[in-house]
Length: 212
Image (tube, rainbow, N blue to C red; front, top):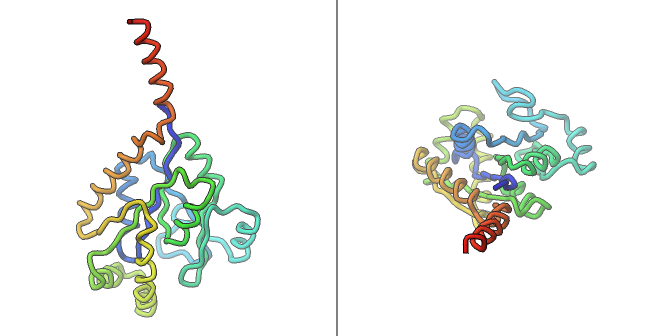
């Protein structure tokens, strides 16, 4: 029973754990394709073009938006981020799930796009603001000024939690991973995502009539 793929959206304030959860979801099911976003920010240590992001100039990014090549895009912390539309459509059309690690602005754009019926959106909350700050400091990726900027932005991001299908509090990463997998499994089995069920029922009816 073939189905269209899911657009699995994970969002959270910086430091709440969405990137870790995204990686664990793909480890659980390697068939899930990670949507590689384009961004104008500089690569971090260890990042490779085409793997974590497509690193482009601001001029090239603006051209892609103008030409309608982006499913969603946003400016976050002074840089542009966006998801190319064509590879996503191709993937879900053959039943492959696509995973997005994006903020609420991107999630909202996708939820209002032509692909909205395929969206599964999940917001990740931290157990506390103190823990959120601790995680940002512990990961060691940003300067103190950037950490403060992210913390100042966190409440605005958290305030959009009601716009998502599911909300998970990431107090224990192992338990959160299990809940996330359960959600994906259940959504894959939702009747509206299984177009082949109707045909199967028709065959059962024909068989019932033959047996009767």
